Amino acid sequence: MNTAMVIARNTISEALRKKILNAFLMVGVVLIALTFIFQQFAPRQELTLVKGMGLGIISLAGLFITVILCINLVPTEVERRTIYTILAKPVRRYEFLLGKFFGALGTLGINIGLMGLAFVVAVAVKQIGAENAVSPLILFKGILMIAMQMLLLAALAMFFSTFVTPLVNFFLTMVLFVIGNLSSYTLDLAKNSQVAIVKYVLLGVHYVVPNFGNFQYTNPLLQPDVVVKNETLFLTQNCAYAVAYATALMVLAILVFDRREV
Amino acid sequence: MAAAIEITNLTKQYPVPMKREFVNAVDNLTLTVGEGEIFGFLGANGAGKTTTIKILLGLIYATSGDANVLGAPAGDIAVKHKISYLPESPYFYEHMTAREIVTFYAQLFGMHREEAKKKADELVDFVGLGGKSDVNKPVSEFSKGMRQRVGIAQSLINDPTLLFYDEPTSGLDAIARRDIRDLMLELKRQGKTMFLSSHQLEDVELVCHRASIIHKGKLQVLGTMDELLGGERVEVKLENAPADLSAKLIADGAIRTGDVLTASVLREEVGSVIDAARVGKASVVSVVPMKRRLEDIFVEIVGGRLDKVSGSLISTGDRPLINNETSTANPYKEIAK
Image (tube, rainbow over all chains, first blue to last red; front, side, top):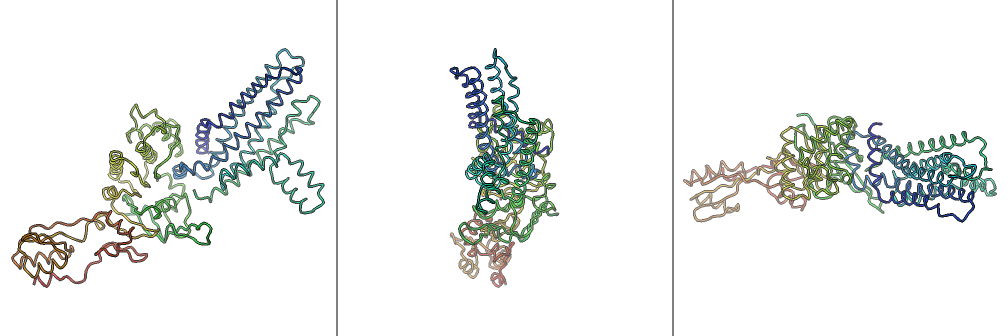
């Protein structure tokens, strides 16, 4: 595991130098700062708007950073042949893959963390002098859910990256992200479908594709009247779901990569 | 001498796109490399050299046959502690300095950061990149020769027993090439085993103990450098050679310049020619072994003209001939009588 950590550190240091990822990070931070331009609304509406936009921006920037980073990690190493010198050393293939994955998670953690920090500071500034101000720290729950969603997405992209090209991977991951966000709809459609085959296909999609919609936590943070019954359980379940699903995907990725010729 | 590498009937097939056919990148290859040996592995582009090296390193898998490295199956993780690899035109993480790169690779051997840094400093100095102007430069600003030196530095981290070098001098200028060659000679002096794939045949001649040539995945030639280059022919110059000897030598391609006859004869015929010259009261001006160049053999094989070469090293099917197709009759013995 020490070897995986060495590779992870190296992956983070390389990824943080990637201009395109930094561009997404900058755009995210700048957009959060720009939420201050909404001055024409009532203070409470304005705050809701800032929170909603902030979480949306972090989610969108996180999505692009995750996908662009993870679809390229393994293919780039193969294409530029750095993988040869690494795997010729006493490095097991699973250590290499896990190193890359942990490196990607570290990079995402830094990116989402920075955007989250900018967002929380922006909300805190916005709340100065406001009546019934709620601690902006509760927004971290929303940011945690975005981070968990991205963890799962990163594992999905890494899994595909062990056997498909980055372009195919981009479309596959994006399509599954969209389908996964509509998971509750696919279940409803399956329940209401009269055609057996359609019903089973939709059920299959619902159960196999990761449920990215689980991680939506914007409404409880924006609307005081929306209450989650057991928030701790909800957050813990979602974290456990993301970690379990990501682990399963990484196990599959390791199995595929172990026999892959590089 | 124990075997460092043992390859037995190794075959690697790749599917031909859009067809139900396979192409043999490596075809029933069998060879052994001894410990402490510098072994040249030659072949044209696409001959199967890099494929063979990748199989030996466990980067790809053989379709059939066996490949053992230091007594263990290719790709064994314990063996990787004792081997190293320098790929052709190595690429490194562009943002890192030579020292950072070597430190990174050293950590992959389980070295702690400080120990790895110390080792990196030593090796960066050893390959001549420890100067003030180079040490803080990112690799993106390095020339090809400097990158190759970084590659060599990373290949020496674990003080390997066995080194796989794939085209270490390709694309380098004369100075850089000489420097890398000197480094390889130093490794030879240290008694390392090296599996050297190269297009630079002069380097192979200079550095290797033995060499092989593969063509279209098949082994064509294998032998020591003496066997390969030490030619089976000797140049003999005779003055005032007797008529019967002159006639025979000229018929075999000798050239007469005034009273001096210059002939190229097979090594095993030299004694008989000199005896015949003495019997005929001729003077032996000089006897000089004629050396072949590896390039000649290489071009003959790759160009498919090897069967026109007289003497040794002719491949017959899967079996490489390792020297010495001696002629059965020596016509000069009769003249010497």
